[in-house]
Length: 256
Image 1 (cartoon, rainbow, N blue to C red):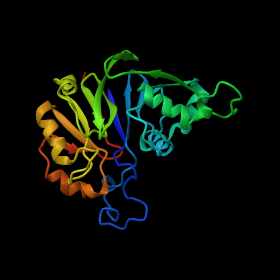
Image 2: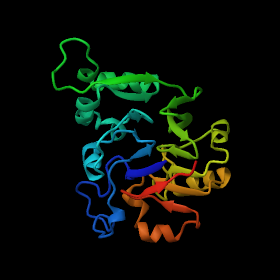
Image 3: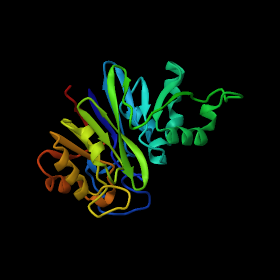
């Protein structure tokens, strides 16, 4: 399985509009971050985790010709606002399968009512086939078991996902021990680490490293980072040898 980091930035991306900071002026491409999402590829299928506002740009950048499904972690706009741009895939392939918590699917129905409409549909509107999932029930997607992981984004319950030897968790602030047990013997962990300073709804780098020490993955990649994290090159030198700051367009292979 291949994982491509389509975006690794926080809700406003990096740099932030109107912000003239040292990181904003960086010439290191790793310091330019679109909103967080990822593309998983295996067996000839492509599956997105989340559908960021930058979805169109991300698909064009990576020349994605087909997309078989989208897994949503939660309903916040930086993870869902690109949904209208699935239209070219729908024209070629039919309804886009999407998966999310019942609350998330309902929010999408409200925000994108024209996508879910069954009567008087706009001719150019995309369409989806929505499946409601829970953290308690794994499901199979194109031959692979998907294990939802319940995490807390502040006080909001959201999902991460484990697929084989990969676990992908973003926007977490707290993960219960029972859910951490789902990460037992995971090879590759993707985990949010917003910045160095504490934050009320996101793990900071110290809290993320504590989870890494508890889970013991072979390798970890931090994502969903703000410009206040600092320069990629500098922060990377401060991390343990098996922990990496992810960056846009990074591709890694996941062993079965």
